[in-house]
Length: 398
Image 1 (cartoon, rainbow, N blue to C red):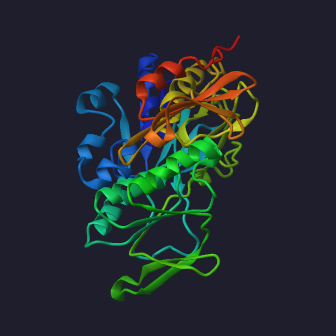
Image 2: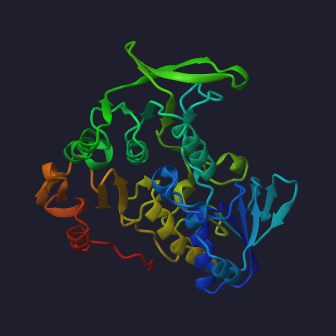
Image 3: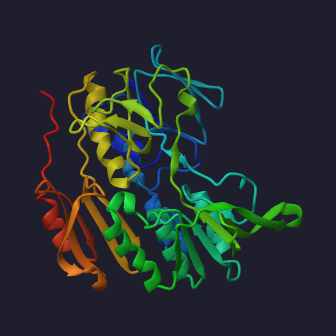
């Protein structure tokens, strides 16, 4: 291959660029990104950057020296609009076209929104630097009442940051227990208790029906509260919606690639075209272990997939399987939460050290007598030791 285009300039795309050079690729390397930004790290957006304690430059994934060494040709502020993999062509939003030998799709996705909220001031999602800057401006304008819709990791982190700013915060969660679909009810409850510890009001089983607004003059409408199914009204000056994301695949219509809640790939992250691979939040791959179709929205997954995808892209076929570690972490309030493995909510949970009441403990998930996952709150040392006991299948293809 003499030329490769990486579509998407965040973590997954950056790691793919690094892996291509590490694995010996010395051809042209284009990076196309819709944002007018050099690649940056997203996890701090809901924490230190949102709080204003971390500068924009500290988010950068590449320093000047590494940028020069990678010899990347950036096309920032430009979208990929069409892909013709058979003819190796990519149409861009500025009217230009790239003709390349290989493509890495790393477009991630866009946050899900509440219906009917477009254009309402005070309503925010959090995915980009600009999102975080806009939210920060609203959070620091007086002492707004904040409602966070969604008690997943992003919602909990935003709530934590808002409480650190001294704001009144209410978190609305449709499930009976936050994170129960990931952690199960017992450990989901342990995470939920962090909100109460720090003065955040958590409302479970709360389904949003719509928003109340008022005329904001030249700015149109501004949010004044959240209306719940059942008729209850919760006043709010700022609403943050954290209810997941939608993979960015619209530009692939007519490409011939399998697209269904992500870009379909095999176990090596290779699409139906051997010169096109997908990585990160947008990749929906077939597990080499279970045969099920999986898509992850985690930092570690985005970083780890790149090496496998690049190996297979350069080989022209699937030479390696991708087998995720399942590692996820989240900093909430004064606690660090860590999860590794692939637990199911129905797995048997055993507390092996500490107690949830102490907010410092480690638990394992057992299935048929086998440890399939490890969870920790504020105990990284034991967590790291136990996570190594989770069996990992080999990644090489015979």
